[in-house]
Amino acid sequence: MPNSKPALDVWDSCCIIGILNAEVDKLPALLAQTQFFETGKALLGIPSSAVAEIYTLSDGTSAAAKIEEFLNNSYVQFLQSTREVVTVSSKLQFRFNCNQIADLRDKAIAAGVPNKQASKLKSRDSEILAAAIVYKADRLTTYDPFLIFLGREYIQAETGLVISGPSSSMLPFPPLGNPRP
Amino acid sequence: MPKRKREPKESKLAHDHFSLSLKLETTDRNNPNVDVDDFFNTAEKWLRALKTFAKEQGQHVKWEIVDLKKASALIQVQPVKVTTGRPALALVKKWEEGLRKIEKTGKPAPKFTPEALSALREFVFSVPANTRVSIGTGAAAERHPITATTQRRVEQAASQFPAQSTGEYVSQGSVRGRLAVLDSWNPDDRSFRLQLPLAPNKPVRCTYRDSSLSTELGEGFDGMVEITGQLRYKPGQPWPYAADVEHVRVLPRKPKVSLKDLVGLVTLPEGQDSTAYVRGLRDAE
Image (cartoon, rainbow over all chains, first blue to last red; front, side, top):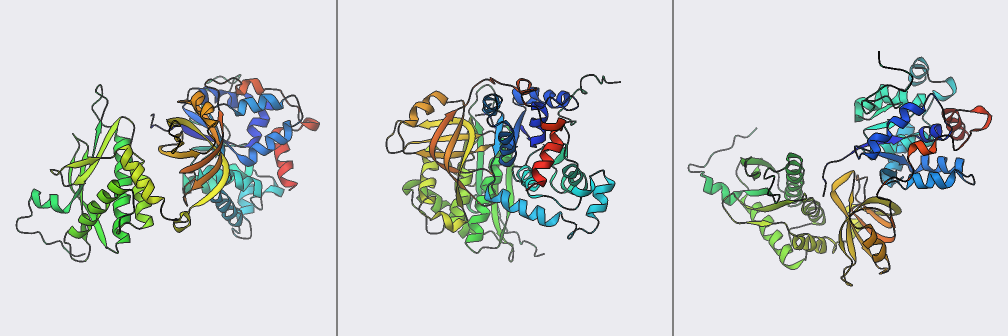
């Protein structure tokens, strides 16, 4: 039995939806991760709430069957909202609120988070963050500015979880069309 | 801090009476060295089991290393009473006697509380692949290997306590893993072990009633499967330790559809990008 653990890269739904929507600014970096998943170096973790958002988008369309087949890949790990995840999620929501941290909003805006998102961590976002923390992910890949801000300001130092877009040490080469200098 | 008084002739032999040992040996002839992760993972679980046992006995002890042989991956520890600095001989005896009783009968030993048994269970099920793990008293004394029988007996003993007493909970759900050990041919024990990629040293013990599942299990053996059913969790653990399986789905051994195949399958409304689309969904809640 192999006892070495692959890395766990948790993807927010905007990553998969970005691929489905063929977003040119996201595709190269996201698709470059395939090699890590298909060679067993990393697992693609998808929290159950993110799965729901992907299904909501594709349900009833011709994309549904292919997405279903993709999610059957053995390197995809569904991260269930267990009791632990729900508990951590509610604690995160309570903590990351400008009522609890007075300068949260100002810091978030200064970091580039849009005004209307900067006051608190919303329930679906906190569920995804909680899943990444509880399942001890190596990174949470997202394009959400507030989650990235929380990662840099608080979460990475406390838990080691890296929250960013897919420009990590797991990505050995720059995005296509942007050659290394 | 109280200083420990040394006995006049606290010889190696004396240590053997007061100490417990753990030894790992690889069964791989081509590579006789024990994997360092395997050693530390197993030793950590063993020590946790010893500490839980001591705590449940109300013993305030610390565990000291009295011998460590890297060549043979052996560690020998002894409990020392924090207040007096003297070895806690009785604790070692109770542990050994209790463990042997459990191994022999599959029933909880008097000194093993649910918490102590739970920690013992976690240890005996953490045996790494291709490795023989043995435990006993002292370095010279005979050690007993952890075998499938040991695991079964400890499991039997642990199952005699109600799950609620340890804060465990059950939740309906699915989990994916490698179908590792299959015992579907015994009608009294329809079970298999699922090795989780992210917790390879903590296989999920899966039981099932529906004998027709053995077809999927045969097909999925040594490959990845998704099981669905009642998953049993310990508090603070993200992955289940046991499952009552209702469905088994065999996952493809090679990817059929990759991320690249998903490109352009959907067009978001009004030229939105995925970040704005997801934000809209979440803000609308």
